[in-house]
Length: 134
Image (cartoon, rainbow, N blue to C red; front, side, top):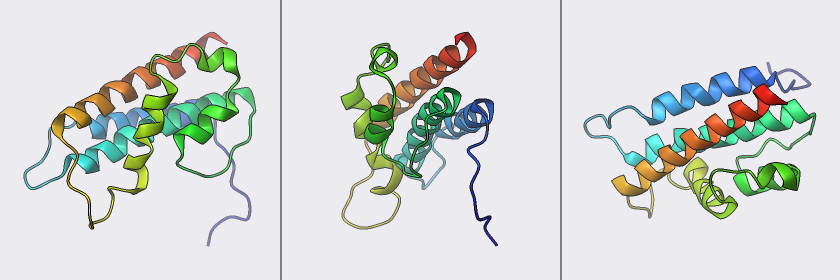
């Protein structure tokens, strides 16, 4: 049975989960696997890093996977220091759902996968630094 109310957890909890997702995104591609599955974890790293900051700031958010939406909840002075552009981060949103199930999509090219992991790593580091120093 699910609880009636979901508690947001601490920023440290969110960052721990983000680090775990980054570790999963960074593993070598197992035989007969898809880069899109690893990209899902890169997207989760970004999402959870942003949610860690929102929790740190006391900003409530909907339970969504949309990076662009999460970015709109952050104050402009914070998003101004993003190490990756908001447009690039919004593109990562597609890895949350679109590629998770079969049908109509080719796997993500290795170059796109490597870019997603690099961007996720930068956002996690940025979020960790922000939370540590504010």
